[in-house]
Length: 172
Image (cartoon, rainbow, N blue to C red; front, side, top):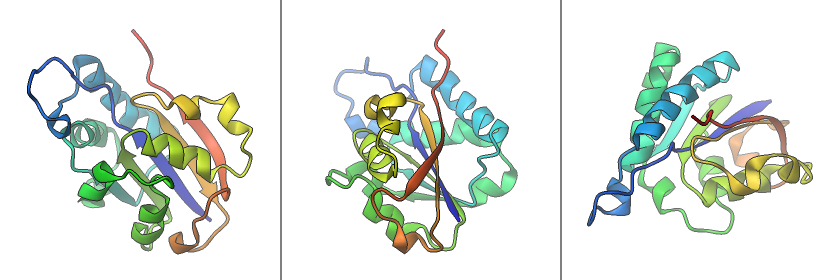
């Protein structure tokens, strides 16, 4: 059994003229949500043994602010990937996860929309879950956790996931 946690980066700032999308930092609300993400992951027992994170500034900041709430070993399990930011294929992150999951039994990806939402919905074995959760309109700072009855990430395929839970940051 493998587990996957999909995290969309927390709320980013849009107020800096001329700043490239890749370089946008988190907004103050996003910084609070990023710390909440770490606390929520720890409270739910969603501790990954491998983390794949986009190299964009807002995803890096999201992960860095979430990490203090998680065991120290998680920090050592982080790898950074340009491909996560650049993902534009119709299958979302599915191929990337299948090829980069390695030997992890609990994998986490910190990424962007629309790829995060496309991946989450595509993985659902029970597609009706998409209409009962915010997966179709995956909010910033949203966390979805899945379980798969597979032994290798290379066997990851559409429709093979069971949604364990979905969480969104509290609004102030």
